[in-house]
Image (cartoon, rainbow, N blue to C red):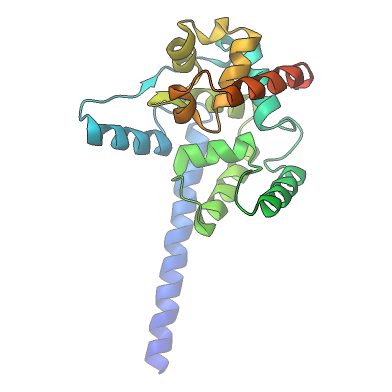
Length: 231
Protein backbone atom coordinates (compact mmCIF):
# COMPACT_ATOMS: atom_id res chain seq x y z
CA UNK A 1 0.00 0.00 0.00
CA UNK A 2 2.88 2.35 0.77
CA UNK A 3 4.43 1.68 -2.64
CA UNK A 4 1.08 2.25 -4.33
CA UNK A 5 0.66 5.53 -2.47
CA UNK A 6 4.18 6.58 -3.50
CA UNK A 7 3.50 5.82 -7.15
CA UNK A 8 0.22 7.70 -7.06
CA UNK A 9 2.02 10.68 -5.57
CA UNK A 10 4.69 10.53 -8.28
CA UNK A 11 2.08 10.28 -11.03
CA UNK A 12 0.14 13.21 -9.58
CA UNK A 13 3.29 15.34 -9.33
CA UNK A 14 4.26 14.33 -12.87
CA UNK A 15 0.88 15.32 -14.27
CA UNK A 16 1.01 18.60 -12.38
CA UNK A 17 4.47 19.26 -13.79
CA UNK A 18 3.26 18.60 -17.34
CA UNK A 19 0.32 20.91 -16.80
CA UNK A 20 2.65 23.62 -15.51
CA UNK A 21 4.96 23.18 -18.51
CA UNK A 22 1.95 23.52 -20.82
CA UNK A 23 1.00 26.81 -19.16
CA UNK A 24 4.57 28.10 -19.64
CA UNK A 25 4.40 27.02 -23.30
CA UNK A 26 1.17 28.98 -23.76
CA UNK A 27 2.66 31.97 -21.92
CA UNK A 28 5.65 31.90 -24.26
CA UNK A 29 3.39 32.13 -27.31
CA UNK A 30 1.39 34.96 -25.73
CA UNK A 31 4.65 36.86 -25.14
CA UNK A 32 5.86 36.19 -28.69
CA UNK A 33 2.60 37.25 -30.31
CA UNK A 34 2.65 40.53 -28.46
CA UNK A 35 5.24 41.64 -31.06
CA UNK A 36 4.89 39.09 -33.88
CA UNK A 37 1.62 38.59 -35.73
CA UNK A 38 0.31 35.01 -35.55
CA UNK A 39 0.28 33.39 -38.99
CA UNK A 40 -2.32 30.82 -38.00
CA UNK A 41 -4.37 29.72 -34.98
CA UNK A 42 -5.64 26.46 -33.53
CA UNK A 43 -9.15 27.25 -34.76
CA UNK A 44 -7.89 28.01 -38.28
CA UNK A 45 -6.07 24.66 -38.36
CA UNK A 46 -9.23 22.84 -37.29
CA UNK A 47 -11.31 24.51 -40.01
CA UNK A 48 -8.64 23.90 -42.65
CA UNK A 49 -8.51 20.19 -41.76
CA UNK A 50 -12.31 20.02 -42.15
CA UNK A 51 -12.16 21.71 -45.56
CA UNK A 52 -9.35 19.46 -46.76
CA UNK A 53 -11.39 16.33 -46.05
CA UNK A 54 -13.63 17.40 -48.94
CA UNK A 55 -10.94 19.11 -50.99
CA UNK A 56 -7.29 18.23 -50.22
CA UNK A 57 -6.17 21.42 -52.00
CA UNK A 58 -8.41 23.72 -49.95
CA UNK A 59 -6.80 26.79 -48.39
CA UNK A 60 -8.02 29.49 -46.04
CA UNK A 61 -8.70 33.03 -47.21
CA UNK A 62 -6.80 35.30 -44.82
CA UNK A 63 -4.59 38.40 -44.99
CA UNK A 64 -3.16 40.24 -42.04
CA UNK A 65 -3.67 44.01 -41.92
CA UNK A 66 -2.56 46.44 -39.23
CA UNK A 67 -4.92 48.02 -36.72
CA UNK A 68 -4.84 51.39 -38.50
CA UNK A 69 -5.86 49.80 -41.81
CA UNK A 70 -9.15 48.42 -40.49
CA UNK A 71 -12.26 50.57 -40.67
CA UNK A 72 -13.20 52.37 -37.46
CA UNK A 73 -16.77 51.35 -38.27
CA UNK A 74 -15.88 47.65 -38.05
CA UNK A 75 -14.05 48.15 -34.76
CA UNK A 76 -17.05 49.95 -33.30
CA UNK A 77 -19.46 47.38 -34.71
CA UNK A 78 -17.63 44.44 -33.17
CA UNK A 79 -17.34 46.08 -29.76
CA UNK A 80 -21.01 47.08 -29.91
CA UNK A 81 -22.12 43.56 -30.82
CA UNK A 82 -19.66 41.34 -28.96
CA UNK A 83 -18.28 43.19 -25.93
CA UNK A 84 -19.61 46.66 -25.06
CA UNK A 85 -17.40 46.87 -21.94
CA UNK A 86 -14.22 45.78 -23.75
CA UNK A 87 -12.06 48.77 -22.81
CA UNK A 88 -13.14 48.68 -19.14
CA UNK A 89 -13.04 45.04 -18.05
CA UNK A 90 -9.98 42.90 -17.33
CA UNK A 91 -11.00 39.98 -19.52
CA UNK A 92 -14.38 39.00 -18.10
CA UNK A 93 -17.74 40.74 -18.17
CA UNK A 94 -19.31 39.29 -15.04
CA UNK A 95 -22.59 41.10 -15.55
CA UNK A 96 -22.77 39.80 -19.10
CA UNK A 97 -22.02 36.26 -17.95
CA UNK A 98 -24.80 36.46 -15.36
CA UNK A 99 -27.28 37.71 -17.96
CA UNK A 100 -26.26 34.89 -20.32
CA UNK A 101 -26.81 32.29 -17.58
CA UNK A 102 -30.25 33.71 -16.80
CA UNK A 103 -31.19 33.78 -20.49
CA UNK A 104 -30.02 30.18 -21.00
CA UNK A 105 -31.98 29.02 -17.94
CA UNK A 106 -35.10 30.78 -19.20
CA UNK A 107 -34.81 29.18 -22.66
CA UNK A 108 -33.81 25.80 -21.29
CA UNK A 109 -30.79 25.60 -23.58
CA UNK A 110 -27.61 27.48 -24.41
CA UNK A 111 -28.58 30.51 -26.50
CA UNK A 112 -26.10 33.07 -25.12
CA UNK A 113 -22.44 32.80 -24.15
CA UNK A 114 -21.39 36.01 -22.45
CA UNK A 115 -17.79 35.64 -23.65
CA UNK A 116 -15.73 38.79 -24.06
CA UNK A 117 -13.53 39.58 -27.06
CA UNK A 118 -10.52 38.55 -24.95
CA UNK A 119 -12.09 35.18 -24.13
CA UNK A 120 -13.04 34.56 -27.75
CA UNK A 121 -9.50 35.37 -28.84
CA UNK A 122 -8.01 33.03 -26.23
CA UNK A 123 -10.18 30.20 -27.57
CA UNK A 124 -9.40 30.93 -31.22
CA UNK A 125 -5.65 31.14 -30.70
CA UNK A 126 -5.11 27.96 -28.72
CA UNK A 127 -8.20 25.82 -28.10
CA UNK A 128 -10.84 23.68 -29.75
CA UNK A 129 -14.54 24.65 -29.97
CA UNK A 130 -15.44 21.82 -27.55
CA UNK A 131 -17.53 23.13 -24.64
CA UNK A 132 -15.92 21.22 -21.78
CA UNK A 133 -15.03 22.38 -18.24
CA UNK A 134 -11.33 21.86 -19.05
CA UNK A 135 -11.57 24.06 -22.16
CA UNK A 136 -13.38 26.82 -20.29
CA UNK A 137 -10.81 26.72 -17.47
CA UNK A 138 -7.92 26.92 -19.91
CA UNK A 139 -9.68 29.72 -21.79
CA UNK A 140 -9.89 31.71 -18.55
CA UNK A 141 -6.16 31.23 -17.85
CA UNK A 142 -5.17 32.33 -21.37
CA UNK A 143 -7.54 35.30 -21.12
CA UNK A 144 -5.72 36.46 -17.99
CA UNK A 145 -2.40 36.10 -19.80
CA UNK A 146 -3.60 38.18 -22.76
CA UNK A 147 -5.03 40.91 -20.56
CA UNK A 148 -1.85 41.05 -18.44
CA UNK A 149 0.61 41.27 -21.34
CA UNK A 150 -1.19 42.77 -24.34
CA UNK A 151 -2.74 46.19 -24.66
CA UNK A 152 -6.44 46.40 -25.46
CA UNK A 153 -5.53 47.68 -28.91
CA UNK A 154 -3.33 44.64 -29.55
CA UNK A 155 -6.08 42.27 -28.38
CA UNK A 156 -8.57 43.91 -30.75
CA UNK A 157 -6.07 43.98 -33.63
CA UNK A 158 -5.34 40.26 -33.38
CA UNK A 159 -9.02 39.45 -32.86
CA UNK A 160 -9.96 41.36 -36.01
CA UNK A 161 -7.37 39.43 -38.00
CA UNK A 162 -8.04 35.87 -36.83
CA UNK A 163 -11.77 35.40 -36.24
CA UNK A 164 -13.85 33.29 -38.62
CA UNK A 165 -16.08 35.21 -41.05
CA UNK A 166 -17.29 32.54 -43.45
CA UNK A 167 -16.47 29.15 -44.91
CA UNK A 168 -12.67 29.26 -44.85
CA UNK A 169 -12.68 33.05 -44.46
CA UNK A 170 -10.67 34.53 -41.57
CA UNK A 171 -9.96 38.10 -40.58
CA UNK A 172 -11.34 41.50 -41.49
CA UNK A 173 -9.44 41.96 -44.76
CA UNK A 174 -10.48 38.60 -46.20
CA UNK A 175 -14.06 39.16 -45.02
CA UNK A 176 -14.32 42.62 -46.60
CA UNK A 177 -13.04 41.26 -49.91
CA UNK A 178 -15.16 38.10 -49.72
CA UNK A 179 -18.47 39.88 -49.08
CA UNK A 180 -17.97 43.34 -50.61
CA UNK A 181 -14.93 43.25 -52.88
CA UNK A 182 -13.21 46.05 -50.95
CA UNK A 183 -10.45 46.36 -48.36
CA UNK A 184 -11.14 46.35 -44.62
CA UNK A 185 -10.26 50.05 -44.46
CA UNK A 186 -13.11 50.94 -46.86
CA UNK A 187 -15.99 49.33 -44.96
CA UNK A 188 -18.99 51.62 -44.47
CA UNK A 189 -21.08 51.58 -41.25
CA UNK A 190 -23.83 49.40 -42.78
CA UNK A 191 -21.31 46.87 -44.10
CA UNK A 192 -19.42 46.79 -40.81
CA UNK A 193 -22.62 46.23 -38.83
CA UNK A 194 -23.59 43.32 -41.08
CA UNK A 195 -20.15 41.72 -40.76
CA UNK A 196 -20.32 42.07 -36.96
CA UNK A 197 -23.73 40.42 -36.96
CA UNK A 198 -22.26 37.40 -38.77
CA UNK A 199 -19.61 36.66 -36.13
CA UNK A 200 -21.65 34.28 -33.90
CA UNK A 201 -22.52 32.04 -36.88
CA UNK A 202 -20.32 33.01 -39.82
CA UNK A 203 -20.58 29.88 -41.97
CA UNK A 204 -24.38 29.98 -41.84
CA UNK A 205 -24.52 33.63 -42.81
CA UNK A 206 -21.99 33.04 -45.58
CA UNK A 207 -24.67 30.88 -47.20
CA UNK A 208 -27.63 33.05 -46.07
CA UNK A 209 -26.39 36.59 -46.56
CA UNK A 210 -29.87 38.06 -46.93
CA UNK A 211 -31.36 36.37 -43.87
CA UNK A 212 -33.93 38.60 -42.19
CA UNK A 213 -32.44 37.87 -38.77
CA UNK A 214 -29.07 39.20 -39.91
CA UNK A 215 -30.63 42.42 -41.17
CA UNK A 216 -32.34 42.95 -37.79
CA UNK A 217 -29.09 42.31 -35.92
CA UNK A 218 -27.21 44.72 -38.17
CA UNK A 219 -29.79 47.42 -37.45
CA UNK A 220 -29.41 46.96 -33.70
CA UNK A 221 -25.63 47.03 -33.97
CA UNK A 222 -25.68 50.22 -36.04
CA UNK A 223 -27.75 51.94 -33.37
CA UNK A 224 -25.18 50.97 -30.73
CA UNK A 225 -22.04 51.81 -32.73
CA UNK A 226 -21.83 55.54 -31.87
CA UNK A 227 -21.49 54.70 -28.17
CA UNK A 228 -18.87 51.96 -28.67
CA UNK A 229 -15.56 52.98 -27.03
CA UNK A 230 -12.39 52.07 -28.89
CA UNK A 231 -9.00 51.34 -27.28
